[in-house]
Image (cartoon, rainbow, N blue to C red; front, top):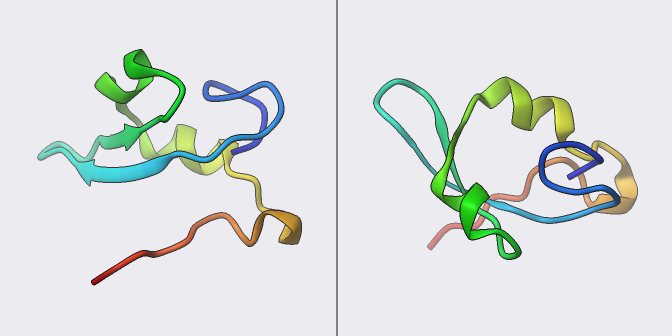
Length: 63
């Protein structure tokens, strides 16, 4: 993540789900409060670190 709601310098969060109305659920390892909120996808997309040094904006982890 880039500077914004989740960090002032750099940070990782996990997108853990989507609500029925399309809001995003996150797991933020440094904030229970942010982990309990629902988020607009636009906020997350606007604050992703898109640089190659971060490995891209998203990683997909699956079984």
